[in-house]
Image 1 (cartoon, one colour):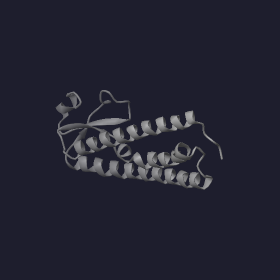
Image 2 (image 1 turned 60 degrees about the vertical axis):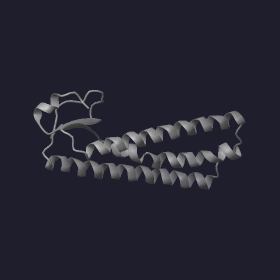
Image 3 (image 1 turned 135 degrees about the vertical axis):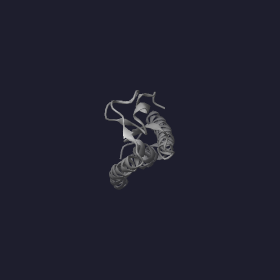
Image 4 (image 1 turned 120 degrees about the vertical axis):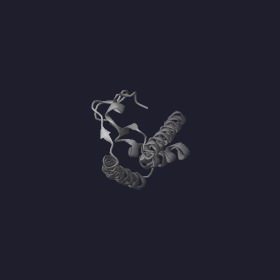
Length: 146
């Protein structure tokens, strides 16, 4: 097992803090976006990554757990723990992928049933294919994104 110097341990703490901040921010904005979706506004931008944002903690938490051994004990985590964590990360990714797929299919069919139409083009501030704008009426498609 590798020994980690004090400097390396500090870098692990810094990495963990950044990962925690990213996880919390991702969760917050994902929940906020999903709340907007279910408030059924006149127009909104739908991102396929909303569910991923909410469930990102399923990937980041095992990574945080894996870094505890180097931080607190100064040695690399046990190989058995690393294997278990790797399996958890794979399961988390699979669950996130399937949840995103099911949510997107469910929500988009729900929007279609409620009379929403998909606007042409890419919403401002988004990369192509990352998000689509939906509106109740065609003229709302021209309004600035919320």
